Length: 445
Image 1 (cartoon, one colour):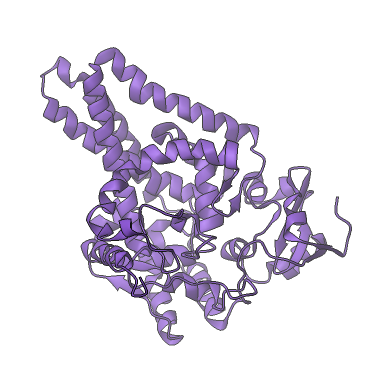
Image 2: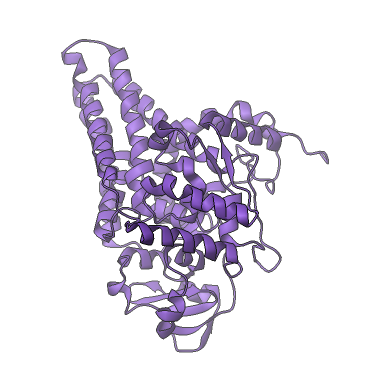
């Protein structure tokens, strides 16, 4: 156990990442929260995920300013003297103002930002549609032999699998539905069982990686690339000949997303033990059971059961169609928000510091679209309000339209551009244009 007033390198901090020895760093100070673990209102999982690392951006996302001084100081044990990932300056007036105004909105209205009854109706519709469309694919031939009708149900099922990712999974990973950590874990596990992809890996990628370090190369796993890579999406990324005209073929590869992720999960958790630059901590029994139980159930319900009822070729056809629909919908939804021509791609300076306020960076690395469309809001899990979501991920998605004007007005006052397209198709066109421009041969070549 660490001694008080000790100095820690990030490598030393990383060793204190277990239930019995749990340190975190916030704004250069290291805190021993081992004894606080079971009393943490956000549950055990959230602290175990952040154990052994600098959690400053995540902590400030989910807590009111001042909590460090009022609560955390009694857990202080030392200082952090090196950084594993980029760090941000102290919150600016913009960050404090927008946060204060949104928090004030909910207090004034007497509303709980995590509770909206409508979300349960949406969850029910998603799961009911997924299950019924799955059953229909299997038993339609007993009523009428119509492959095209089975394909229709496969499309519906694939779309609903994507909705599981955009709604219960996403809401649970941001703790934005109820205040109950057990509910979050159960909703998150639906991704393991219905989609065969890991909720735990998603938490590392999305909550610890993408949201704190949006569009920062080497820190945001969502924009992680190899060298060479099939696509070039970052200005800092090296160009290769295969990137020429990438906008013509790369989007078609997005249909393989789900297939790729299911195997990538295993590699991340059990072999490389890192998701881009985000380290994986020891895995709890619950997450081990959910991970392997989810993989087994997915294979059982998507392949083994259908093979007892339908011919092999039909099973593979329906599986592929549903999987590609799910993959395309998720991939295109995400790409239209961040991998577009208009957004920023910040990089740290030589000292590892991002010379920009974290909240301002969230707005400038994000593009919204179709604010006036209830349909697009519904079928994207409200991610057409992406900047709102990035600033306030702990708020229920059903409140995004309500707090939008508060955020836009604050951005206007502080001269921070708020990017929004009128339609999804304009946003997606911006993604294609981004691919086209980054696919051009550099002049020095």
